[in-house]
Length: 337
Ligand SMILES: [Mg+2]
Image (cartoon, rainbow, N blue to C red):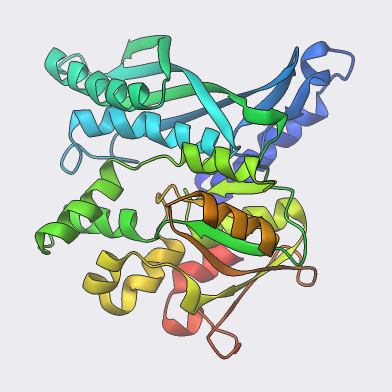
């Protein structure tokens, strides 16, 4: 079977199964492990704290093209996606290691620009870039590993959703996917929309402060919206063995997406991905405390259910089932199965 036939999630399941089957509980490394493969970041106990680690890659012509991204933005985003995974654990990012592959013809100034973008974001979150690797290759790839620690020894994990909890999301959705479409198809919008959609696509803001706030207020289930709301919600349903009921009218579609993408706005918000907002579940009272403690928008979009474990049900305002495939969104059918 080819990698493309098994797909990313199937491939992760395969290697996670192999690694877990070989786990040796007599070894300190395994004894101190809190979360292994399968969440936003790994977590392990270290003396009196819990440490976190995550790695992600941006590959030229798979995740980015230099036609729509500057080198500076590339550096920013390569770090941002990792900081977002630490945020999704409720952690504090501390250290980053950067592994680059570059064609020999790359301009030195361009590499300096990449680091300028990365350093700008690193400084903002107090992250130290402590090393890495560079190697020659036919295409540009940027692998960033981020290490962090958990505040208050508590984590946001994918397996902690409980029936009866509300499902909530920070910020607005759909802007990153809409921004990518705007940049790659050279769509023309007004200045404000162009700015916010472009930024969402190439300079996402990791929700580190919000992740820490969630943990502090007692939230225990969180994930960042990287693959797309429905896809990430499915990870939660599978890890927590629960169902989810989402009221589509409540999904916070980004205003610039609503204004410029018409009937496709909801599709971009549900399936677009790369928004790097935090999706979490908690009781009404905890969500009320979270809302009171931040100026970041927090929207309740549905609830966790005990029936239909592993599945997501979408309903309209009247509670009637909303069928995405009927809308002609066949690619969602694939994602949902
Ligand atoms: Mg993630």
